[in-house]
Length: 406
Image (cartoon, rainbow, N blue to C red; front, side, top):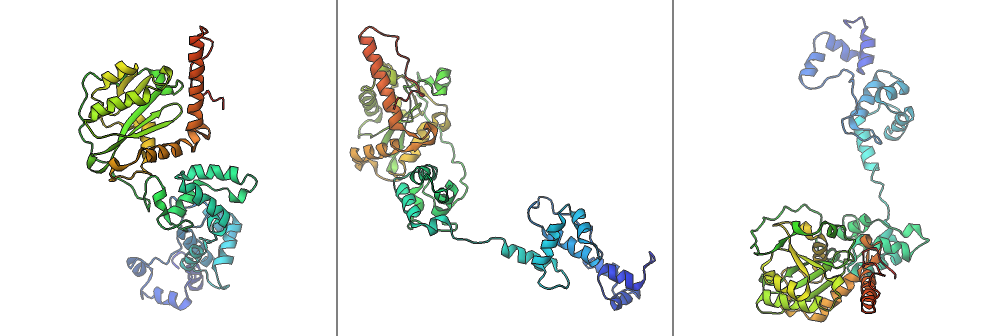
């Protein structure tokens, strides 16, 4: 009113009754008093909250709409001030104003939030055949990504049955649905029933093996995985670290060889078993071996003398330098859980687990299996040996990761 507005005009701008304006004019809980109480009746020059959704109206925007409606502003002017389309403001009033009278921003916010989820029946819940096939694949300990890839081949023309791996993860974790039996999260490699961050474990000092080749000394071309015959190895330990399973992974084909470690002096047994297992392979398929810094490889020099296989050791606390082997260990842990007594494991059980892992389609192998890829490498190595023995050496290329005649 100090700016020249009449009582009626000022009350219309503020959205209050004329009697209320009359009371404020005479000092009864006026605008200044309301501001002191945190209740500012003046129209807000509000903007959307920082980081708000570009798709949905925020609560601040709804408050701004309510204030501007009280000021008799048009829908187009409100839309321009908010940077929205006029149709967005029109739909907001049509949906979230149950009557044609005053627009209540907080009630509109609750109505919009309640309507937003739009619950619907998921694909796995409503399709029994799809659910059964997913369960079959998971029972073979396939990852959700491998299952989704297999769905495209199992149902090639049925796009409504193609899933993304997040859908299967949600089903397993029970975030929205549970299409597989209780305890199905154990089918995942992590064995977790819910998603939660894990803190890094404390690094333990490891015994350094003397006279060892460090991974920094390894030829750079091995890191490209283009040449076959380079392996990574490690142990997965059993209960109280008294039993173990040896895992060997060929870097280019991701082929896994696993066997239980017999009782005895671990370094001696490890030497003998490595010579026995790798000795049956052609020399071109057992060029190098990269290992962790465990004391079980104390007799690595004798392995090199017997096989001609150079043994390299990773840096301390650097498991990513044997990434393929770490991945294979995680896959094998689905069959032999932590804390289990591995001394009672039958060799046939270990072979079965390795065969299942090697038979899975792998994204890193263009959805071939490790068995197919390694078999092709063996075929090429055999042809090379035949060419050498017949005097035609040099006519065949060395086996590489890309060679896959099958």
